[in-house]
Amino acid sequence: MTAGATVLGVAAMSGVSHAETSGPPAERAHARPAPALGLRLGGTLSYDERTRTAAAGLDVGAGIGTPVAGAGVRLRTGASASLGDGSVKAGARLGVRAKTPAGSAVVRLKTGAALSAGKRTAGGRTELDVGLAPSGGKPIAAHLALSACVGSGCAQAPTPPTPPT
Image (tube, rainbow, N blue to C red):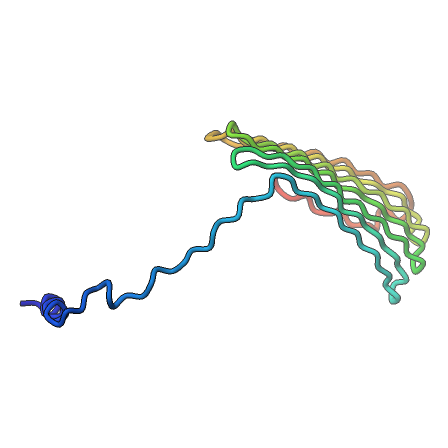
């Protein structure tokens, strides 16, 4: 007789069953369904005394979803002004997404501009990302970026790295 069989035999002879020794089953948290409609509204306002820079931002978004499909849009904007180096910057990001059983799609647009009296430059950058992912298929993505800088300080400004696509 094995040790396991002995333990089961002793437990059976003593009248103790598995049901009597185990505790109640753990209660599972009921899954809350995701909201069908989501809204987002946020804002920021800050001032940095060290650099004498004031900044403001706005974040607005909306989405709708079901267990099978969904869509959403989000707009984020921001601006800053610095008395320290006499610069003004502004930018915006727009994102749109959609998901269905057939696949999903994402479009992102980012744009920004900067003026600097201290560096004597004016510049801007715009980026567009598009992604398509068919259900069960190979995803496709495209990235386009355009930037420009005018002024004597442009040679000093490093070109920001572009992430691989």
